[in-house]
Length: 258
Image (cartoon, rainbow, N blue to C red):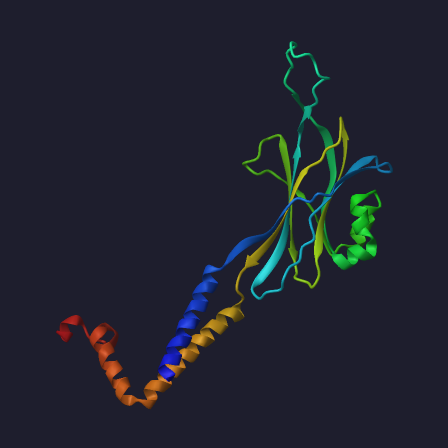
């Protein structure tokens, strides 16, 4: 009975330790773009504001798991000039032209706000009807915020400017929303970046999880040791078997064994 229980515990302990080593990875648990995309004119500062937000997301609390949100915004420095009014089919239609979009980004900022704070501040309505006042609301009620930094990924074309940011998230008992706000001034039209939100789950067991696996192994080894202490005949038989199969472990060479 003790021997069987010890073998079972050792198997469980080994399986737990191996699985923890294999499970270290980063998994995206939310990816997408929000349908909320709003633009407004900030007349006081003479700039254009652009806002987009993720869907509401929740993060379950689990041991050995941490979270972070990644935001990626792509701005195109070239835009397609609309074609002239429709022409008769007999007249050749020139292809659309690509022209440089003249704009300057003054701020690209990511906010994360809890649902309770969003309800208290009226942010839910303001997301669909933004104005220059929304910046002060986000700064006051957001739990965390950061500025996006311009990056230069090698795989991106030269006419695409990429801004990226990551924020660590702590699991809480309510949903959250991520909001991106861009302030810029431009000539020749409105600029709307392509924005992607991704919530990442980082699976990395903590030391106490490994210790629990080791405790299970030690408990199994203790039960097996107790079994052989209660049955010395089996212990002698096991010792003799080990000496025959692994002579080098007991200080005997294979030549001496023959």
